[in-house]
Length: 406
Ligand SMILES: [Ca+2]
Ligand SMILES: [Ca+2]
Ligand SMILES: [Ca+2]
Image (tube, rainbow, N blue to C red; front, side, top):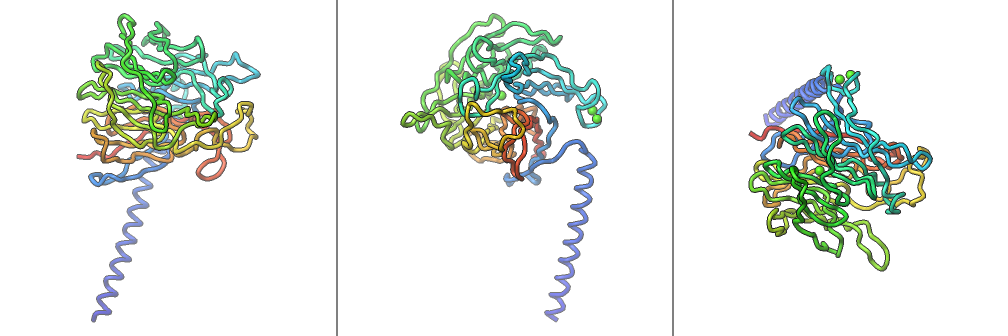
């Protein structure tokens, strides 16, 4: 009798398993039909309150160092690209640009006629490897992008010495005033009333604010050395909508030990909370590695982008970045180890939203359930080691969609 009951339990288990397979097959077919142009890359779940993990999809690919992303109300995207860097045989070719991507025929891609409209091109671009002998493949040019409630865009451009600015771009695609020429303005954020723009200045290790009306500038604070004596290198800034506090990503970097420069020390990067009036600083999230950008939602949850998991394969300043036959090298930073994590307002209870991203650089929080991340920093098409063998650098924008928590 006991044996028979066991048999029935066994058969029931097999039937349940088969049913699960059939359901899974149906579900995945449904998925591939609904977003045929978007490849689902990774998904992961850690939050106990959530039933399904976040979905990570590539929405734009083949870009040249995408940075700032703005999502317009019609769902179209404005993207700033830093370009490919300068080619020694053609230094006049400037590939930084600002582009409007609109899926006009609603087929899920941006590759049909008239769907990519370049607003501004021929913007400065350079590679820090050749320009400053950093031993890292790092392209600068157009970077952060914000959209004001009045329709103007604000775009940082880092084109090297004498070619730096936060430019106002009109809704009619005209490049206007330069609001600031501080060095390396990697992160921007509007004040809550959109009268000011906060600026994270990476080279100066400073945080400042500029008034949009009259262009007056005020220093808020200067960041001191971090753990291991590293420079702080602020790269991203966000405003806490609840109280106007500033959250700043301190990337870490440039530690000189016994005359040798170490790129950065993993685990020493932090997010700090700064009072915009007094400049007082307190820790918000600790123990990060190369935090490059930060965002905050209406409940005060903090979203952090970490660019890489560690240093890897520094490259010779003479390395030909544009030679497709070069051996695959990481190029200063371990590739495909970028992450996006959400923290509670007090810095606790982390929730991993995406991992294995290739050198993410910027976060745009469209809503707490819809997040855009630009990835693929470095010289486009350069051979690099990938998760499944050698591959090449590709600039992309990925969207992370979170399941509804209610
Ligand atoms: Ca289309
Ligand atoms: Ca199409
Ligand atoms: Ca940013």
